[in-house]
Image (cartoon, rainbow, N blue to C red; front, side):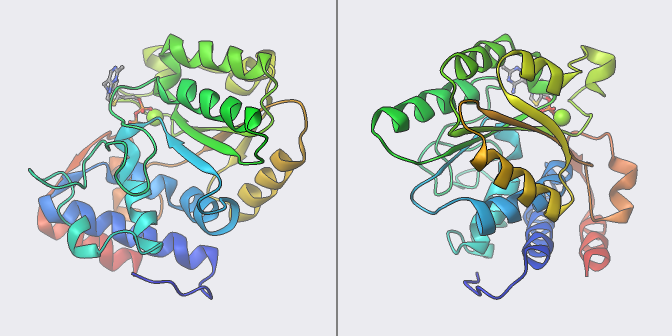
Length: 263
Ligand SMILES: Cc1ncc(C[n+]2csc(CCOP(=O)(O)OP(=O)(O)O)c2C)c(N)n1
Ligand SMILES: [Mg+2]
């Protein structure tokens, strides 16, 4: 745990990546590719963008919870020892999270539902006269769910400029590349047609992420969508071979080598 305010965002992202590997090492398996891919986004969200107790993060892609747990560890919400019980029977460190676990506003697992909840929260905050902002993470595979587009239509209709949709565009779903399963592109253009200020960003560039969030805050009258280009396994060279692997199950030595590579 650390509350060291002097760490840079790059150092936070690096620590989040190490925690992701530590979590998978516990049981020898987990969503390591997604956790590593989302580490930079998590660092910027939690240590630059979200105002604690004020803004909302809605993780629609429940199985990517590992990234949020690892970031929550940086905030001091979970001890590393507990995070190492990730996915074990009886642990509250679920592979897909439950609403009410520290860091999680909704229950995950059934894909496609989070944006609807985020739209409801954003509308609710507006009705209350609050300036709270709502950030919602969905995945590229999840865009195949019709409910996401119903929610997007609603966000555009209500001109929810307090809503930021983040698409984890890692070009991977359980059965391969969405382009080969059921194509979802062109995502920015589709979301723009639904009323979003939408664009694609490199979600491993801390500068691009910060600039995009700044622009979203300055955008009035429209929700923002950031199609975040991410690389599964980002930061651990030997995980390149797992680039298109949705779930990693490996021997202890593999996790130990990953930690050595991260440094
Ligand atoms: C409604 C629903 N349908 C199917 C699944 C099974 N499922 C779990 S993960 C997954 C892949 C979704 O794509 P994506 O989130 O892009 O995968 P990743 O990038 O993490 O590999 C699917 C179909 C689910 N969790 N919920
Ligand atoms: Mg994906």
